[in-house]
Length: 135
Length: 130
Image 1: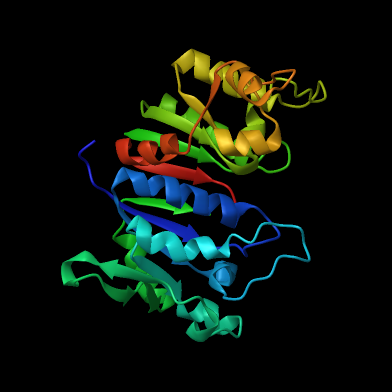
Image 2: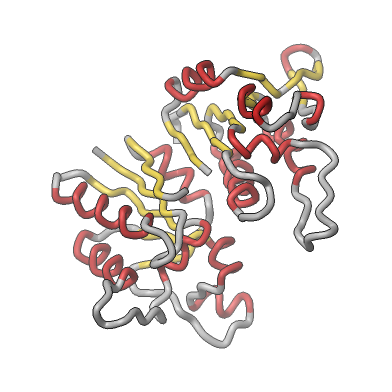
């Protein structure tokens, strides 16, 4: 399979309450094996997926949020977070996990994965893609 | 155009299962090719042959089976989603020690890789769901 396409996984739902966020993450992890040009975006209530310090002990659900920190190891280095969605929910970047990846070309320097973008900029990112997975 | 269709919602609960079906049917009538229909999340419930809707209602599962058989379409239920929701074929029954199967004709159970591969191989990936 030699074709490389630009894949964007869009996450729009809160992490718990429905299974969309968890099953979306499963697709992202499986999809990483296909060596495509992958980005992940978080918007609407999806920004809650990245909030740090999640504690699910009261709801009997698996806390899968530590998995997002592993995305860098799957060579997923472009994580877009929509600024307006954060602001509308009273969140800032400081409320989110600090996600990083290691740049092989720069002696494994640690780099930030999260790119804070405006709604309009995210629209441009969407327009550049070949395949949009919408969860 | 070559299409992969993803169905994320269960039948009767949500219109996505209907919209996806009508989209697939219309696309085929227009001469497009459907590379795969992939059922994910509660969408895997589109593939149980045990569904029994009232007689005056549409039979969503039977409708999928008919479409797939008529046009030789690859219809895949995600294995992880199917296991969670109790959709079982012979292989899954044997692997997980279940005493019954319920997969409908025309469907098969496979991995999420089939969805990603559908995205790579098709001109468009069309997603139905919330």
